[in-house]
Image (cartoon, rainbow over all chains, first blue to last red; front, side, top):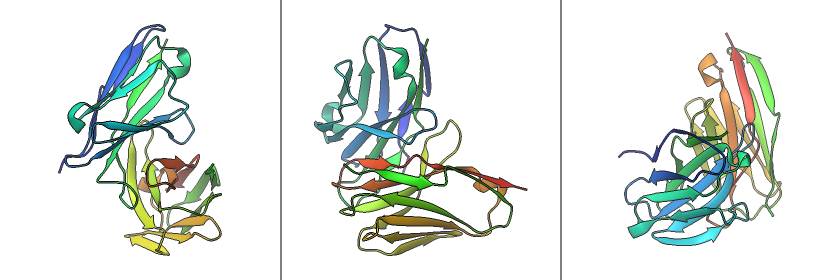
Amino acid sequence: DTGVSQDPRHKITKRGQNVTFRCDPISEHNRLYWYRQTLGQGPEFLTYFQNEAQLEKSRLLSDRFSAERPKGSFSTLEIQRTEQGDSAMYLCASSLGSGKYEQYFGPGTRLTVT
Amino acid sequence: KQEVTQIPAALSVPEGENLVLNCSFTDSAIYNLQWFRQDPGKGLTSLLLIQSSQREQTSGRLNASLDKSSGRSTLYIAASQPGDSATYLCAVNNAGNMLTFGGGTRLMVKP
């Protein structure tokens, strides 16, 4: 049973560029979550999927952010026209379902916007 | 809106000491609470999950308790080791969906 994987692990980009991150959840997990963590803070929720349906988005997810989960498998998070304030660790997690189920996290993608 | 607070923000102890990390939350209507460990620049490793109906969970040298009515959880680490040095995060699941995290406690165990 492999864990949650994320790609790339690190991304350095210039302000104004678009970036895309990928998350592969644990197989058979129908819930997939994205969080963002800035230095010295706890992670903050961005959005989550139940299979391929995006069910909730945080107000942190501005119009420049979009997430997809085609076919209910892997997910992508795209940031358009990146800003320096987007620099953070982007974490993906998955779970078997809602409620009582444990969330398992991937290693994260560290984004640096210069 | 759920708010989660962790005290202390940082803690330094000598090796072998037993220690307690604290987590408090404002909305007691929770599904469960998770404790995580995070090493610098890494992702989160789940340590313990306590369901709302449980009072405590144990794994090795770790014991987590939950007092839902008072909005508190503690993580007890017995016989601390330098390898325990990391940031410990607690997170609350309210609506069965996303987690709300505290700011973490940065632990340093000195040899």
